[in-house]
Image 1 (cartoon, one colour):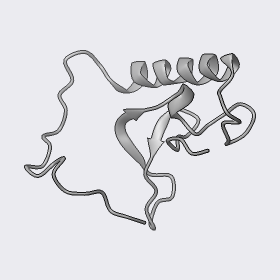
Image 2 (cartoon, helix red, strand yellow):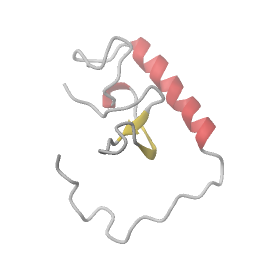
Image 3 (cartoon, one colour):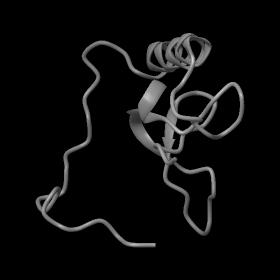
Amino acid sequence: MGGIPTNHLGQVLRPTAENPDAVVPGLLAAGEAACASVHGANRLGANSLLDIVVFGRQCGLTVANNMKPNDTQPELPADAGTTPPVSP
């Protein structure tokens, strides 16, 4: 079914050969977008209310713990958004 791979904190995963648990800093997903479930890593057509409550809350807690008001974001590379993603 697909979906964005995430960890239990709602952080989007971008695995590498060196680190299969690497995350995309500052990017989170929950609900229909995420490929995570209380019932297993599949979507079964739609996520349940329990999934949205559990993972939506966890995403909120992750944001509260990791991001503070007036934090700055790193500058994007000059070619950000113009190069195609790397195919597996």
